[in-house]
Image (cartoon, rainbow, N blue to C red; front, side, top):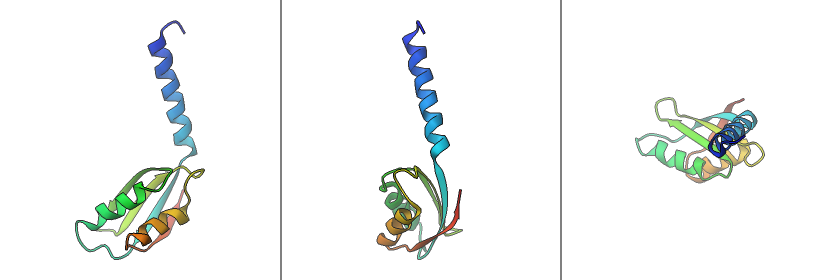
Length: 95
């Protein structure tokens, strides 16, 4: 490619596709959440786990959906992070 910007863009797009293809999604059932601050605490605990790309926590359903790199994180690491933060969790679904 003669255009360095186009080459850089193509490289970034290919790299992000490769990461997305290798990611897994875990849905966790999270106990002890009873106020508006609880999901924030759980999300921050999950985001500290190396390999976590995103974490969305819902107070109403008492659940968390976590996208992670299985080469760097495991479902056990995710549940350990929430438990260590005071919110025991179990894996409800793993994709």
